[in-house]
Length: 319
Image 1 (cartoon, rainbow, N blue to C red):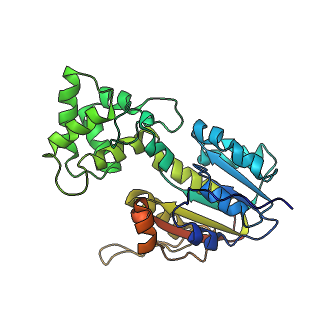
Image 2 (cartoon, rainbow, N blue to C red):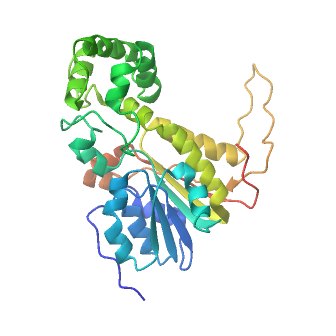
């Protein structure tokens, strides 16, 4: 029997609640779809599972996780790739079904804290935001996208009500000097929105929208949930932690649809037909949010929401 895994200073949000939803037991196979700093993976290993397959798009996370691979004594496999492709990536390794899957959606604390990654305006750095460190960067987007495209990014992904004002200011500013740094962009956004007022930085929503666009995060989330549906065995457990309303809405709607909870029509419209396929998830739990104590320990937990469900024996849906 391997020695107990050493404690880690990184405690993931809603860790105990996620473990309760996953209901792990010895001998099971689990997936951590978003490895990050390894907080969930370490906790899952601590439950005595047979093996954990952990995914991350960020090559730095895979590199930094090698110590935990060694520590886990053959029970952990780290896979560099998108969780939307995890069914195919696991099939390549001979894995067709698993017992539990956990998601921690969005940017990791490590990425936010590293100024050179360009995810945050808290510390000035290159305007990058790419989780995979490949493809178009945030600077490429703000320097080349049209005013209309930028407004849509900030409005739909950042939920910025004054998205058009922000986009117009960016297009005007880049004509004089291309954007290269996070603080440079943040200052233009702040000026467009009337400067700093209140505890929330005016640039927050626009940065969120830009990051989600650069990494196609909502599309990846949808792909990841469908992949989890295909991978989980009957009775398998799914737990998803999200950090803003756009992500949570995707998860909530997916579980409601896959759980057969199709909304009826309004008094102005005919009733919607029931689901065309048998529900692929059941025991869909009420949303769980962090306690005041957890938020006091970790302010980043404030906006977190956990949703969970159990896989039925019905086939995975086609879309």
